[in-house]
Amino acid sequence: MTMLARLGGAQAITQGILAQFRGLNQVPHGSYHEEQESDYLMDRLRRMGLSPRRDPAGNVLAEVPPAPGRENCPLLILQGHMDMVCTVRPGSGFDPLRDTPRLVIQDGVLRTDGSSTLGADNNLGNATVLWLMEQDLNHGPLRLLFTVCEEVGLQGAAQVDPGWLQGAYGLLNTDGFHLGRAIAGSAGGRRERCVRPLLLSPAPAGEGWRLTLSGGIGGHSGDDIHKNRCNAVRALADFLTRLSPELDVWIGDLSGGSAHNAIPMQAQAVLVLPQGQGGRLQAEVRRWQEELRRQYQTADPNLTAVLEASALPAAVWSGEDRAAALALLTGLHNGVYAMHPAFPGVVGASANIGRVYREGERLCVLAFLRCARREEERALFAQHDRTAAQNGFVLEEVSCYHGWPGSPDSRLIRLLCQSYREATGEEMEVTAVHVGLEPSVLGEKNPDMVMVSTGPDILDAHCVDERAPLAGLPYYAAALAGVLEGL
Image (cartoon, one colour):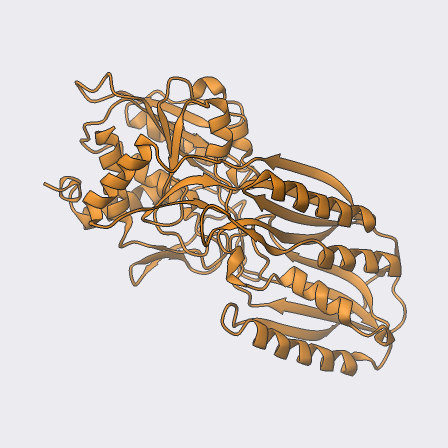
C-alpha cells in the first residue's frame, strides 16, 4: 500500500492539513506578534498528549516519543516558523494586529480575499507536521520546533538554546516554497535601516500634488528578486531624480513598501510645485507611465502612475535632504547582484529596497541584502555602507546572519528524495535557494546535525497575491511521512 493510501487518500490528507492550517491562522501572528499563536501551539501540543516547552522568546519545542520498537532510531527535528509577513492591500481595511487572513479556496488554490498575505509561509508546513503527528506512523524519536521572528532576520532561531538541538541526527525544515525541491543550502542576509534627519521648512506658495505608483505585484525579496518585477520605491525615486530642475519640485513626503524582505508594490510622494506647473508634471507622469508599461509589460503589467491634486503639506524637505534621499534610494543596489557559481539559475547575491517612510523628522529606509558567499557579502555590504555615508544616512540598525553552505549528499537528503520518488514517481531537485532559512542559524548551534529544507508549493509569498495550490499537498505530506518512517 502506498503512503498516500495509508494516510487516507489525497482528499482526506488535504482536508486534514487545511483544518490544522485554519487553527494556526485563527489568531494574528505577524513578526514580533506571535504570542497568540505560541499560546495556541502550546495548547494544541498538550491536546496531542505532548509536554511542550517554551523559551522567553516564544519559541516552542515538544518531544514526540517513538513508535514501539523504534526507540534506537536517530532523532530528527521537524522545524518551522510561526510568524508571517503581513503585507496589506492599501484601502482594504485589514489590520494585521487585529485581523487574521481571510481564507478562500478557488479552483483548487488556497489564497486570501486579496486584502493581505496568506501566511502559508510557513504555517502550511507547520500544519502538515501537526497533522502527521496524529497519524499512525512508525517513526523514531522526533522533536518539534516552532520558532518566532523568522521573517525579521531569523531572530527567533538565534535565541534557541543550543541544548534544544543536542542529540539530533538531523533537522528537516518545512519552509521551502517549491514542492519537489530538496534545499541543501541558503543565502545569508543583512537587514538595514538607514536614517537621516530632515530639515523641514514651511511649504512655499504653490500647488500641492500627490503622485502614486501602484498595482505592482511585489513579492518575496529572495524568491522573486530575479523576476524583473518593479520595485515601486526605487522606480518613484528614479522618476523624481530625473525631473527637470526647472519644475522646482519640493517634496513634502515620500513613502512606500512594507518590509525589508518584501518587494514594494506601491509608493507615493506629496509634492509642491509653483502655481501653474501641474500640467508640465502631468505630462512627465504620462511619459513615465508609458516607460513603465514598456519595461514591465510582461513581468509587472498592472503598474499605474497617478498624479492628483492635493492640499499643500504643512512643510517640505530642504533641497539638500531631497537630493540625499533620492541619491540613496537610487544608489543602493536593488535587484540581482550576482548568480550562484555552484547552482545554475540560482541567484547568489541581491539587494531589495523594502520600505521608505517618515518617523517624525527623520527619513528611514529599510533594505535587505542576501549573499551566498562571503566575497559578495564584503562587496555588497561595502557598497551600501559607502552610499549611506556619502548621503548623510546612518545605518542605525543592522542585523546579519551568514549563509548555510550545506551538503547536497547527506543520508537525510537521499532519504527525502527516495520518499518523494515513491510518493510521486518523480525525481526531486537538490539545490540551494536565495532566501534566508533557519538552518543557517540552527546549524551553527549543532554543527554535527545534517539538515534539509523542503516545503509545499507557495506562490508569490510576502505579497497579497500569495497562494498555495492544493493538488501537491498530499504528496508533500506523504514524502515527509516516508522520511519519518525511513530514517
